[in-house]
Length: 205
Image (cartoon, rainbow, N blue to C red; front, side):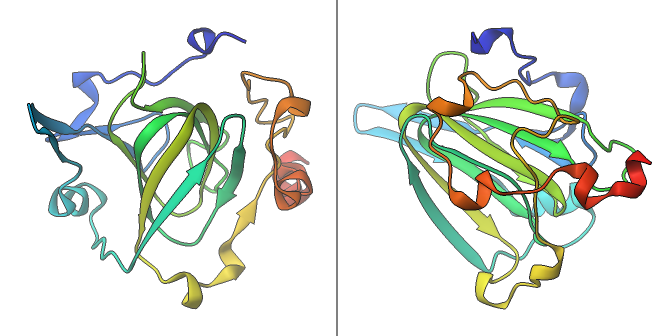
């Protein structure tokens, strides 16, 4: 599938809620544009301003842990929804981020956003702020993808009761992936994750 046939998220000034912060079709999911200053030495990148994020979400975003991940082409991770807020920034490569609202009481339940994130043709170089409970996934388009994500909870102390892993191929989400499943590199956890109907049968009764 051609990535450009997907309904990719595009920055629109009418969706700006704060300087460089833009809302999406999913409640409390935001795209944050970046500022880059380049010269003959390289570049300086201003990734995000935490006070501005806090102003938009109406609560503190106190970073307690920074994680760095590397993935090769056709790796796919997700759909994971954890009990923490997360700021994701790609520093190299291009990935397709698909985010879905799987919060059963949310007014945007089942809404999806496709975002091409990173450094490449048609990719957005900014960050995504993901509020807890929103399922997120990453499919690697141009390798290697390096990304950093900041969390407001410590992994070792997290409340796992709120963690959810929904199938990447859930029929109710009906995500359009750019390659067939057999070409993807998927963890056992993601291969064996449940569907939304299994997790929230009352929503589909």
